[in-house]
Image (cartoon, rainbow, N blue to C red; front, side):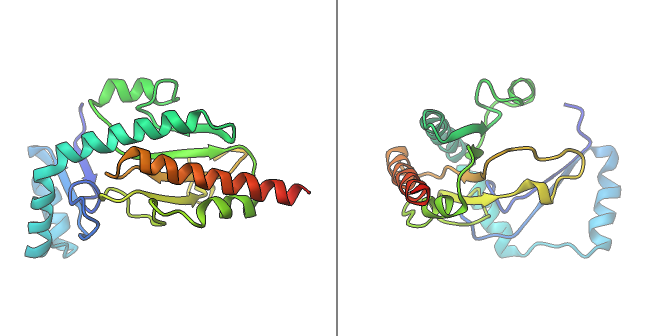
Length: 201
């Protein structure tokens, strides 16, 4: 695809078990010497244990990614039918604004996606998140477990502005059975609806 340098978080899907802090730099032969000199000057190294754990993860990477993608597709299909959902941010999904680029450059997807809700009181979103049993709260996606966390990209955006009118949730579809994940989300949405109705009274 014409990429000269790719920097990737091996902490995520490559390791796959949320137990490694590691990154990889992939480059062309023409730039390899410069890249090698840079990371050596910065003192970046990886331990033998972390290298072993990353190699362990590589052995199951393809089957895990297939399951992550399949679970994300099931979840996004279910979420798209919920009236509180304004937008699903998942380029592998037809209709997504990035779908054409995804089709051009990728042969698969992962389990990470964004979910924009219609405007909801903060208390209602907290009610959705509180009590989740299948989904943990955390940032380090790419492991076997499902995660959900509120996010606000407006703090990090520099080239474009984040213009969503409702709250954003970042969801990682793990390797659990999709029925269990949907049941957990369904219960969370029920808590959100009940909290919003109580606040409206």
